[in-house]
Image (cartoon, rainbow, N blue to C red):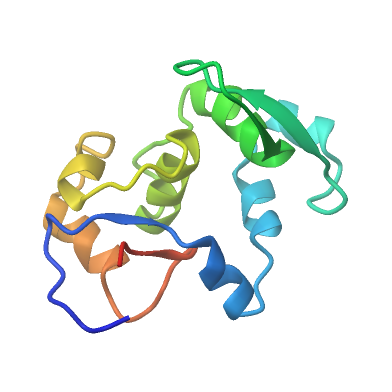
Amino acid sequence: MAWKRITVDTAFHIDWEWWAANDKNYRINLYEQLCEECRRRFLSAVDVEEVDWIDPGTAEITRADALQMCLRTRCAHEPGFINESLPVAAAVFRIFLMNGNKPSTAHDLHKYLPWRQPETILRVIGGREVHYGIRPID
């Protein structure tokens, strides 16, 4: 990726290819985000099957990771799923998981994290260190 200036208007997402390129297992991090009910349902982060998922907006059926779908359909609706005590990177990771990895700017993310200024969010996700595979869109 060519270098370009990153601002609060730069769109970010979870770059799933980054996980593979860096020999990291994203499933472990997904599992860590699960609510207690889903942790009981999935006893580990490995050997979790894909499931059919129906997009509520388009009715399109796709194959999806069961951990991601549990996070999106169950955990994201739990009180405190995103809260002030979470590190910024973890909170942003959860936002991307619950919104289907929709590209978002620091301004967009601030709507979910009103206790953090967009500039603070940008410093965390736009720095040299990559957290949770969160990277700018090419």
